[in-house]
Length: 100
Image 1 (cartoon, rainbow, N blue to C red):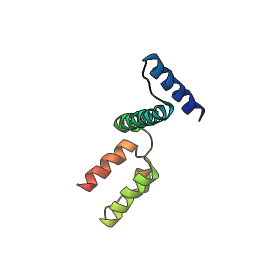
Image 2 (image 1 turned 90 degrees about the vertical axis):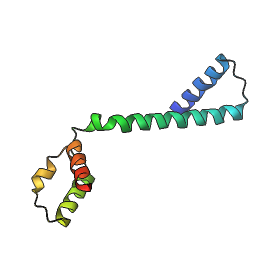
Image 3 (image 1 turned 60 degrees about the vertical axis):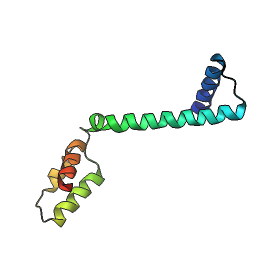
């Protein structure tokens, strides 16, 4: 909440500095739109960069379970240890290849 209030204060100061005349309710609405756009930009930046940033981390349990289920449904032999050693990138590549 403290960060929100600081950002809102900075937003109001920016509007005053730029001599944008808006009343209190309009300021709140514009700030809400601004924050939504900023969050969207952050999400997209993380989404686009997350594969590179997190690709060497261990595969998630959800990824490993998905791969294990597909292997078992299709009678593909696999070693549990091999799944435990997967990185997120490797698991994503396997999942993509299994989908096709």
